[in-house]
Length: 247
Image (cartoon, rainbow, N blue to C red):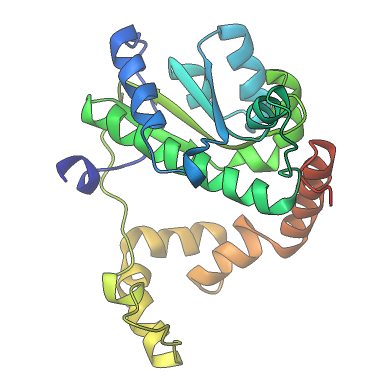
């Protein structure tokens, strides 16, 4: 519980290697995650090579933590391995479709969270890289991912060289619904986001981005509609190329 409630994203790392036994425990923890039908339709690519990390750094919008962290994990939706097992046993797989991309993505994300918990339990820092889906095609090329395998998230792991404050979160009662979903009215929304919008760092973000409100930081600067449409279309192309959209 202490590990969970003290989670923070680390973006600056010391140049200290991670013990192989610790890394193995992190990877083993990943494999113990819940998954679809105990099929484990995911794979994890461990990257330690400076040369490959340099290529991944380029793909991940040149975020320096990709190079600085000693370990880079890419979690992939993977129907390739399970398909080949089925075919080896003369069983005809039917997993080359969007449903199984979705299932495999859930598997990969659950595995990644287990990895992060085990890493933080061992006093390591972690940070998820949201750029994985944005740059999936390049990452596929860098990591030689075959058809049936697509990257869905990445995590950098290392010893922290910073100690940031805990990031704010929305109040629990703004997220949790009991028995049935209760839709939000304007009053609810204002109350849920009241504390977040009142934070000094939030006010600074609004000022630095020269936007009208904090909501505009997201809609006008961080995740603009035209960018969302562009990357959505690009990712759909990658899904088809990797064999996840067959009928």
